[in-house]
Amino acid sequence: MRLEDYWGVGPKTAALLRESLGEERAVEAIEAVDSRTLAEAGLARGRATRILRRVAGGEGMDLLATRDARAVYRDVVSLVESFAVTDRAADRLRVLTPLTDREAIEGRLDGTMAAVEAWRGLDERTREAVAEAFADHDAESEVGAVETALALLDLDLSEGPFAPLESLDEDALAAAATALRALGDGESGRVGEGADDELDRLRTALGSAEDVAADPAGVLEAVQGDARDASEFRDAVRRHLTRETAVEEEYVREALPGEAADADGFVTETLRSLTGVLRERVDERESEIRAGLEADVEAAREDVDLAIEAVDDIAFSVSLARFAVAFDLTRPEFAPAGTDRLAVRGARNLDLLAGGEGERVQPVDYGLGDHTLDVDAPTGDRVSVLTGANSGGKTTLLETLAQVALLAHMGLPVPAEAAEVSEVDRLVFHRRHASFNAGVLESTLRSVVPPLTSGGSTLMLVDEFEAITEPGSAADLLHGLVTLTVERGALGTFVTHLAEDLEPLPDVARVDGIFAEGLTPDLELEVDYQPRFGSLGRSTPEFIVSRLVAEARDASERQGFETLAAAVGQEAVQRTLADARWSGSE
Image (cartoon, rainbow, N blue to C red; front, side, top):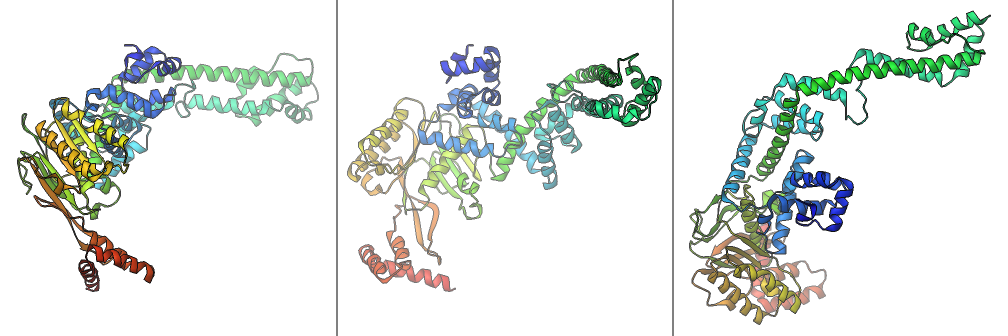
């Protein structure tokens, strides 16, 4: 293939890659999903990632039917990537995409869950040792990968993602590691210190000779007082150089010229000859040692290549396992073909968990379609209209359902105690956008309607559609959207404050509610985030007004909020404040 044949590679990008890498190497990097090589060639990392995601799973990216769905995908991938134990693992995680084939989804789930179970089975000390094995060595380099493999072999691991270690020859790798360390990065052409005692001795001698050779006048001054004639001068130079350097006397004798015009020329010629001889000896010895080391590496080439591949795969699997265990993710169950469902038990929002809200996150149950999960959600309802208090968690639940559906389609575990998911062709997720104009309405309709009407299966998750047009029209449009969702056989949840204006709903649609229960002693809104199925939730403005009354800064401000309290129900506001004070006094 030519570079321009790849998605996202236009003339400018192709020209950049050809100039930096050449056509063949650039194509190899794209096919290998090697974002680092592309980035080092000068391609922006974000653009490289987008190109490689299409290469890795172009059809799967079509699942993300809206801008907000793609945003959820990016957030999820970024979170997964944060658990990578190597840069190469991060590169591979960054280009994970939804999958379109059930067999591929199940295959990735099998591998990931095997890694998760193996990781869960390790004690904390072993987990830290595994992480250190990757952190202490540059697993991106050949020698680093071999050293990482040796460190992992020392831990005697063989289950799940560590199974490839059993095929490695530890002795061969140890010898190869020694040779690779000595060979260094290969670019300098120098054999590393410690590889050969004789080579180290010659390098030391050369270094000391070069130091002395930098000051020939000093050598001449040091020896002139000890010599009465030319013969004694020659011996004085020999003794001085043998004494002041790490050079053996035989090399000094060899470097002494047969004759010289004067003392200055004699010293200069001796020093030039001595450093030249030593440099030649170093080069000869280094060439000999390098040949031997390269032969050692070549003899262990198969083991080295296996170690590099094993470390790469282990790093990828361990990274996924660390992510899954950190958030206590579980394997989703996919519905049989021909059935439509999305149901969760004990679901939690990843963004809240990642933000340190773990202990405060209330797990929720929810269900759409003909699910069989053991939750109170009715079965058979394809569409739900979710209502309730402001700041009551409706949008968070919508995002959680999007995360569950997306991760399941990526072949990854999900943030729930249990989940049932049907394969869909498109995920329509639309967040509330507080822009009230015809352009936003048109763009939103163009975003959410075509996926429903283009055939295939769709999951609709739409938040406060009414925020983009006037309430009367919004209710009519939203009712039409709910009806279209049902008619097209899609699943969907629609968050709205206009549920009462949507009646009558289609037979397979229901209204659910999230209820605020009052204020905490700290005047925070106290919400039961678990939706009540078949119940209309209330916005409960009296709770918000109660807090404003309690937090008023002066009498004038308080009087203003008390006027609002009278409008929403003075008795309800007073009761809320009384309940909050009573709860705080306990």
